[in-house]
Length: 304
Image (cartoon, rainbow, N blue to C red; front, side, top):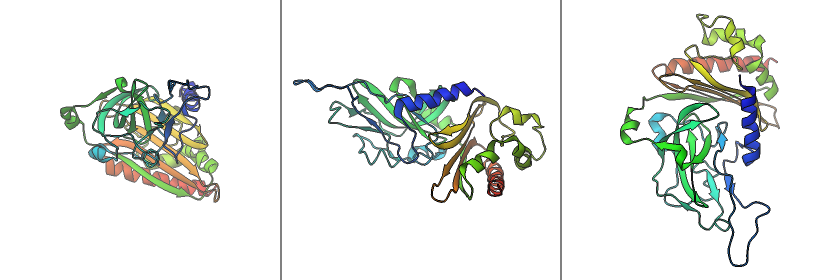
């Protein structure tokens, strides 16, 4: 695992926009503290709106399969309200008093596009839900098919043609939540500590095709036996929530596993959010495996 790589992600996130909040998807474009306003000209300043990366924002932007990508909510023909950037409809809020020249681009959304993600180290399909011009820069906000959101400069994305969209193989993500009567720390132990790996392995590897060496090659006690090359891994505390993301690449699709823990501070119970896929013909069987695996994680965590 490239630990330094994902530490850099966390540091980048902190510097760029403070937090990938599960409860607030809004990224507001504001003036800096040292910005000044001259008597005759209203000044705008550079903004931090390109390169957001919030793959863990599974509440604000849940996974969307390729079959229903064009039904996600969007705002067209105008800039979104602040409320719309907080309810999953849009992403970037622009304060027009401070940025009077900001405007939407003439792009009908949603649009399916390709974007090279430097963090997962692979080209990914994204759903563009916002396109704006601010300070003469064109920026898009998007949601990942596997959940979460990001932003990029318009020049960094490639929109798919109708023919290319038709050629995309239909696939689905297994996505569900599980309430566990245990703390985040207790669940995290079951998810990551080697002593639990071989208790959980028979659920997803009944034929023991992985052998014993797989434990040292991943940061979570789960592994898709059909998974190919791992391009990046992350398994750490991200803004107060334990989060795991493992990205793979293959000739058929860009497979990803996401495990997010959200603890209720009042009850000390934890919600485990899981997104894995995309899957093709094996969706139902993989769904059963993941649900059985998660139930075992719940059982072991609650016994801690």
